[in-house]
Image (cartoon, rainbow, N blue to C red):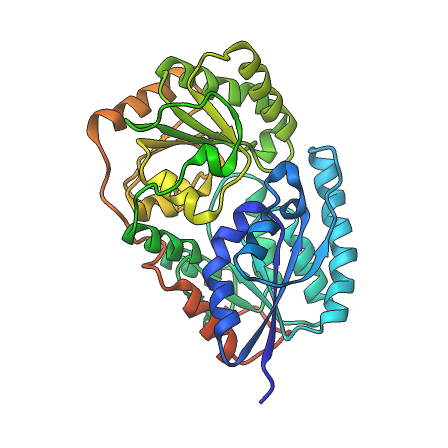
Length: 385
């Protein structure tokens, strides 16, 4: 029997860590053949050049799709998605996959879904059915309606996808593949590398041995014109705390220019603060950095997912993760210096919270591969009631 060709499209740095274990399981599965397509900001050096980590991890990239239009505003997001539809349509025509996999809810994932659905290729969607509060919500649910196979990360997400009219027989709670990596890290959690030596970065070479914070804050696409103001509140809070801090640059979203310019301006005027800035890290290194931190500050979904499993305290800022299922490790605050700093001080005084398995227990990658190998394939569906 011929192997099923599974084409996974990765368009951004965070998406790789979310599906790395699924890629490994697909690659190792006797009934599957992995076709890895890397596109968008995952190819760009200014956002960490995630494709290098994929190749270093032993994955062969079948196609690279350059599709990011400069501008980092809503218009460039729309045009980038349009370019993605054009380029990915050709990629799928040439690769002839049996299933295309799209991941989560970044704006350009719609290009994958449209190019697949319009060519009658069964589409699998990972991490549908979740709730947040920005443009990702529309993208996520649009991907769900275009998809034929739903690989969700929680029971709440499964219920929502079914309520959207999807066939329950094609909705699978596999858990989140990023939790698989967190499970591996939890077995050997020690910070076993030198962040400066391995990743360079810019800023002070801080003394982090007695505790440190991690910051990862992205612009919110529906609030993009306020992104600089938002990041300045976080910067002022970190300055007030005056703790060793590892800070990661934002994703390529509308408003990223505002976020980045706010950080650069702050760096120029505060060269004496114990802050070091990175573009990217290998997924397991990043999780070890989080696991040994005092808290994660910002609005990344890693605070909601992996940090819940690892028991890492999180100060979640603003609306980006609004409504998402979560554990007890999160304090939600607005874009306000005083409230951000107060929440960090709460975690410093109270220590680590209990761990949670709301997004699975560490075997999602294998479950995803097994579903893709066995589910009856179809590219036509009707709404269930």
